[in-house]
Length: 226
Length: 304
Image 1: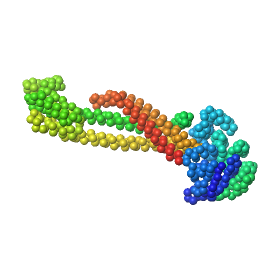
Image 2 (image 1 turned 90 degrees about the vertical axis):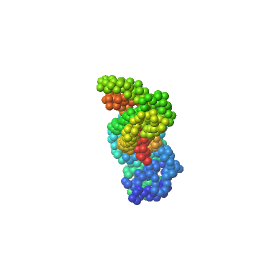
Image 3 (image 1 turned 90 degrees about the horizontal axis):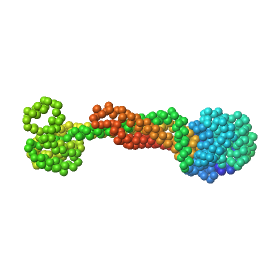
Image 4 (image 1 turned 135 degrees about the vertical axis):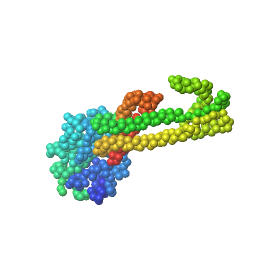
């Protein structure tokens, strides 16, 4: 489904973030990408979303080489990916309800469908009483849950979670991971980028460990070892 | 397609009402700009009126010798019209008409009436009043006709040569004022557009993060850009309504003040007869600048 082929990413002033990375993620897999802060996890996510272009090498999403994809192909791909960003990337001028609805509107879904789906999702994540609040009126944890609701609402083929538990207490973190596991069981691909040792060790799924821009380990039932 | 358009319009109205401060600022700047363009148009109307008044006043009068046959004078008139068809008017004033006109104008002036009685006979000469379109070259043309030998023996005097310098001076002032007005207008409009552009840029700058997030979740460029462009239209329409009301009301109240200074020019009726031009200029300018500014600014942030 996603394939990295000898990908190197160098930022200006010769900062090498990823160095000759090659790996593949198959449909339905649950893959954790672990590494210290600054190891290149977020860059990896950005490359999959086509937000950045590799300095050399190729990134494929379902046989589409993102290096050569045109803007409508990129838009199409982004709609198929539900992303929970580290900094949430909520729409500050839209309410909780509108933030979630926007994702469905981008897809061109019908108003009726949106009116049914959005309250359901908001109920699942416990924000049903805050539908008219704006993101800046929510706590950090609530904002993170909203970001999660937004990532799930479109029933995407793949969920990428970039530090989804960063601002959550252990109980809520556990809830999020359970949710991700549930989604994975339903056949969706999940990519989890985190530096939370406990979560990784509990999961018992594939772990790709990145250090200094290189893949240190890629194990089918990995643990967090750095 | 229709659903998307509806959504874009709804987003635009939501954003507009949620950012009241910015919306008011953008409308205010746009309204000031439109008023500037409008006042230039009013100025052009007044200048045009003044020019035509001045040009009407500077005419040529050819006085014929006493005893010249009316038919001969009418021949000269026909000849002038034949050679110079663009001439505005050529009016024959007979001896009697000149006297009657004099009496009418000076009927309250006892001294002049008495002086005329002392002369006894009708001292006025028949004449042709020639009004050109104000172009000095036409004066030269008419002068040449009058000076040809066929007519010169009929003519007593032409008051063209005395007026020639003034005519040329006025003409050059008018053309300078027009050129200066045009250049000043263009510069002012350019500055105004820059100010509006920067205000809208500031308004959209606020949504920079939002635009990039919309791109990340896969929204198409038009889905992102649409609400901003429509907000530009809303700014333009509201600014237009404000300006149209202000121009109408101020033309109505200024009219009595301006009429004594410019007799025959009613600024309110000028507004009423040209109202559709005002609508076109104000709405076109307001919405046009609003749309183009939004379009350009969002385009910059869409490059994610």
